[in-house]
Image (tube, rainbow, N blue to C red; front, side, top):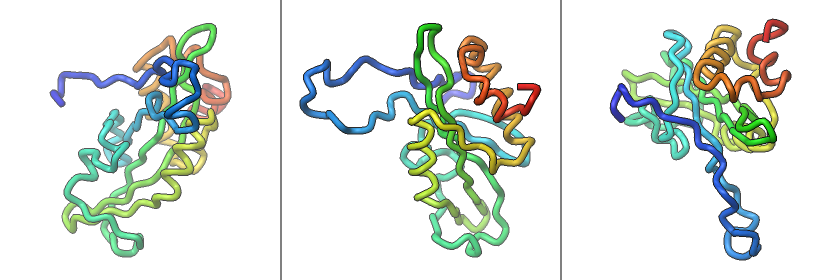
Amino acid sequence: MNKNQRPGFNIIKNDSTMGHGGFGTGSISLNNVSPVIIDTEKQEVFIDMGALHARSEIEKGNKIVKDRSEVPNGKTYWVVWVTVNRNEKGPYYHGLGACELFIDHEAKRLYKSMPEHVNNMDRSLKGRIVVNHMDDKSRKSLGEFLKNFNADMWANSSEELRQSLFGAEG
């Protein structure tokens, strides 16, 4: 993707089954989920849709290992599954599910808990906010990113979501 291009959040599309309840009924749609990545050292925040398939720029070229101890010189990143929904006011940030990635780019090793990613993506889809295990700096960087990305979606979001990122000043 061109560095000057700004990827957007996936916005909910129309009912893919068109109300007929046939093929696709009961399947989970990821049309309204976007992965936001936070580099904890640089506090860079960006959207990388490749993360939906474990192919984000930071994941590419790294071997996924099951034991964190196999990544002794790792660097922490956060992948936050951001779900967008629509209400009478318009689109808003509906759910957040933060998951840790631990990457050693020199050793080409990556640790991530797949169950954590699946469960927190599901929680985000259901409108839950799972960011309390993030460090304060990264949570605030995420909040600033979401607020600056689309002020209307931020304003339409719940007080709980804003406070989970900024505390009482949300």
